[in-house]
Image 1 (cartoon, helix red, strand yellow):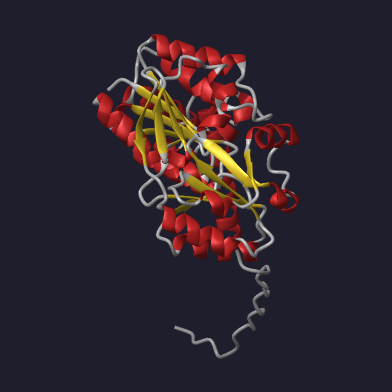
Image 2: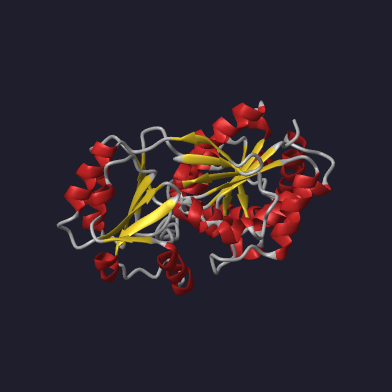
Length: 357
């Protein structure tokens, strides 16, 4: 089957290391895919107000999944085709519980981010560049008390700069409301309504377009991307991705700072083969490398990457680990010390009467 829909996360995936720009190579790859009739979707934990600078760089994107799947915006038809909100009562209870704590948090309402300015000193994380934080804060809606707006449902609530003890407590508060709880940045938790996640939103787009999961490609790097990676048959975790993200994806792409999304899409485009035939090409490449390295070729399907370089790197890492494991196994079977070898005692000559016959 050919690929008909590509969905990609933003921060740590599509965006460059500055979290603000999309590299020219990545823009070109997405444009080429779109020109071939592939539908494109952005899937982000950001809310709608904070992606204008992204869509300005890739104006041909068809859909935006935002606030971690709480809503989907159809850019071509200028319409929201999906929205799942945290109920107002739940929003109120959460804000009342968080209010006494020395924590920074914000709420996403109606495509915008709302914060309490008095809580900004509690945000000391360096997980995002200062230029990005300044842009976010400048565009945010500032309220004296977020509870004053909590009479309507929210897309998402995010709590930042948490130490492990705080993270456990906040997670228990959010999960106690039956909400989806994920993380897209270190030391941070985000929640959405039950069943609202990137995977469900992507599935909704595919269903509307009558596209099967086997025709979908997705890219991500963090825990909030896992549902989207689980849905798409051709799912790629970035090399810089979190362990849970890599576990959820079928394949690996190079890091966002190395144009990993672009390289994977380019490989798909330059080959007339698509789908399983494209992956099989990488399996055969891995099989040949394993044979040269004296490693069983049965491991090849596990080592197929998003492109030639990815497959070569993964195969070489596996070969080195496999041979090191064999050496360690042989070493473990050897005795701890050399055996003591004793010389046999000299035999005494036999004495007796020799009979004459």
